[in-house]
Length: 197
Image (tube, rainbow, N blue to C red; front, side, top):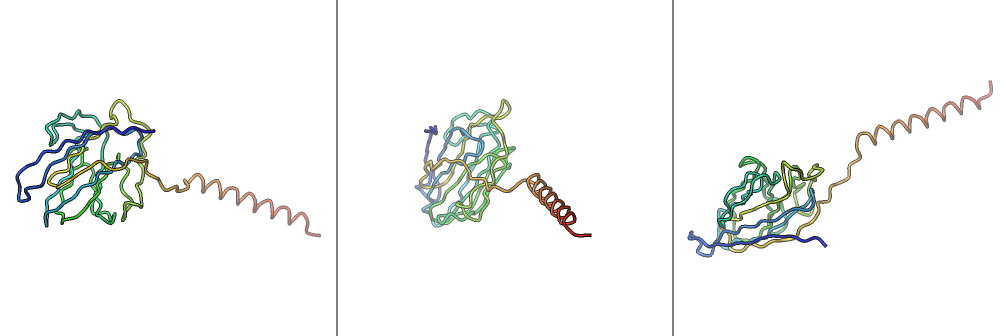
């Protein structure tokens, strides 16, 4: 069974919404096409919510922890309560993601994936494209860090491997066409041989 290691730290701060807080999550992927979900709630009528990663460049997250650089290139996606894709972001802060949205009260889901595994959308259940990466290497490792800022609650959600839709490669189509061409030639040759002269 796969283990997920995540540290969750929350600290409150004073804003127009006294119950709003910052939440910091850290962990590691075990697979290049992994998807990590996070769930959060906004109770204010409207709140400026920020999703920010520290995986690639590193730095000091909202909880004050130092995050090492050289994690993978993350993509953050934001979904509404019904699973509809609201927005996604890649490479706003160097290779890290920074997504700020003015959100009404409600429940939301955020995800982290490795580049280039964008949400296919328009629904979370539509899945992700897959990263096209073969392995984490000495340039980029598997650690991630995410801050969810100015929300009322936040928690770590499911972690799973994205289901990449299978689309036949061009080589497969070329092989299929070559086979059909060969069958056509054999049929024509056989029918000519059997015709009386």
